[in-house]
Image 1 (cartoon, helix red, strand yellow):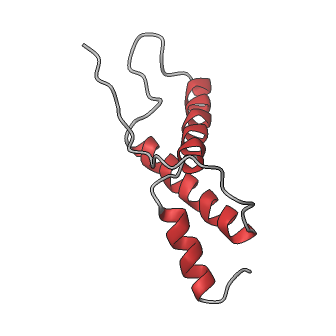
Image 2 (tube, one colour):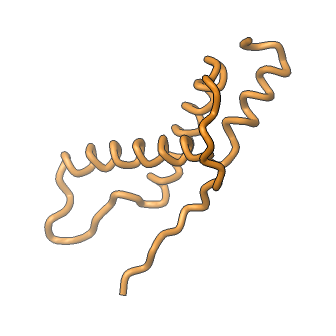
Length: 94
């Protein structure tokens, strides 16, 4: 029996206005954080007789990065908004 992994994602998928550089940087940081969390969770690792090659590890990282970027694009965990707001409050960016 296989188990499904469910990722909680914000349901707000309305198009956002053009992002500032600060917001894009905050989203990049959130995506990097998510990719590392997915790596720690073992996403992309396989344990069977056809796994274990060097190329597999490299392509698994591409998969994790793409998935993390898509999660952020769909609303993410909300870290990008918090980071951008905090930096803007301190006078960085716009």
